Amino acid sequence: MTKFSEADLVLNRDGSVYHLNLKPENVSKNIIVVGDPGRVYRVSKHFDKIEFEMNKREFITHTGTYKGKRFTVLSTGMGVDNIEIAIVELDALFNIDLKERIPRKEKESFNIVRIGTSGAIQEELKVGSQVLSVYGIGMDNLMLYYNLPQTEFEREIGKQLKRELNLPFEPYVVKGSERLMAKFGEGLIEGNTVTSPGFYGPQGRKLRIPVKNPKFLSQITTFHYENFWLTNFEMETSMIYAFARLLGHEALSINAILGNRAKGTFSKNPYKTIDSIIVKVLDRF
Image 1 (tube, one colour):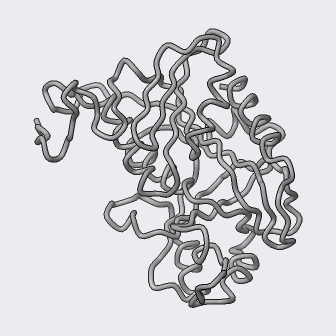
Image 2: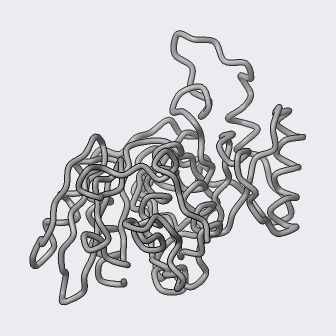
Image 3: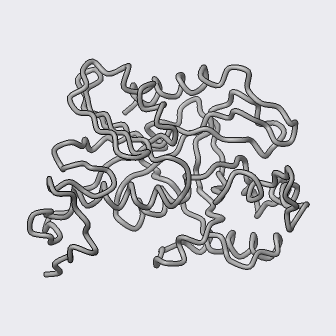
């Protein structure tokens, strides 16, 4: 059986995983992830009881109970690289014997739901909308380091995007958990979420730095394959979906639409939409 070296499975002196600073008993199988560390408190304030707290870098963790059900809420910070760290280390808590440094014989699956914020690409997607991401479309290169299984439909979308946007790489496309979609989807708008490796140039924003492709935003907006359209931009969803597939977990991303790129508008009360999603997720888990 594979034994992971100290350099590959890095642990703290207390036996917790390196970046998250967590031990297996600190985490529930129902996990809510948020980008903004401050949003952890907006979730956990609804808990009946908080049993555990940990602050490590941008990774803040609260575990507690809500209406008798145990939850963990974890902030990841922004970007796909942080998502890789968070999900790989969460998986290690469930599926690696940290003392022996070997994989557990019985694999455990957890549920992970992202509550995020996003900008709409399509004009008809109003500020204040709540979008369930059916597919995540990765515009980063992190998944080049892994062998991600994809369906023929997912691969075809990636090929079409590469060709039509004249990209030097092929985006990866991953569907979220159908089980969680059925559980959380009522009243939410279904969309396909573009995950970008940055907030400005990679999402078609230009301030003082020229971008290589000034038409990028309009190309993303008009891109479609059969009845598949892109709806919104953010920075984490595709990587959550990819690692959930690679590791055998259930993942779903729900985004509050705070801005509309087509109209150039931004929400006057962003927390109203975010708080509404938080309560829905807790109640429907």
